[in-house]
Length: 176
Image (cartoon, rainbow, N blue to C red; front, side, top):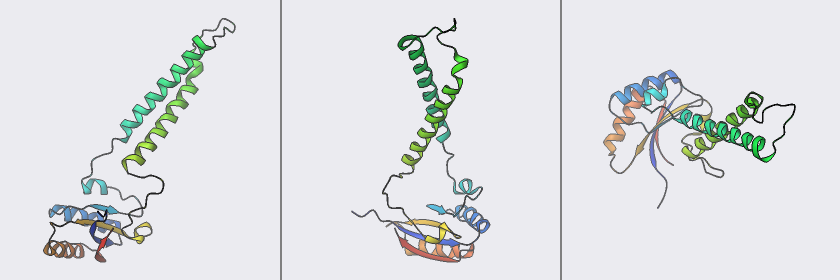
């Protein structure tokens, strides 16, 4: 079984035109599969109806894990593994270990969020990227509509006409 999918692609040359087109196309009731842009377009995720990311929540839990690991490691080393009484100082002086705890929190959070991001986006070494149009990495914008067996030629014609009306400089079908 092939992993290829067929898409209707509309190419735009301006981000404001793209944003307006997304709003009008979604308002007309058509489902946009994805948008490809050479740089982040403010408000595009809202217009596409995408849910906000929960990656920051994962970052909090990874950071809390790093904090717990650092405090546990410091406690174990200072109280049980190698207790050293220097000048009557306590075995566990929390203020002295704030830099270590902070660095562990940041390290665990950064590594955890990076790994989570790659996992959620299905990015791994050696994966062949799905490139709709090479020009979207340079200066053009693309909107894609997935074409499955339920989509008729009338649907393709309607969406193509709507894309052209909304300012698409090019509309074509592509199998990726």
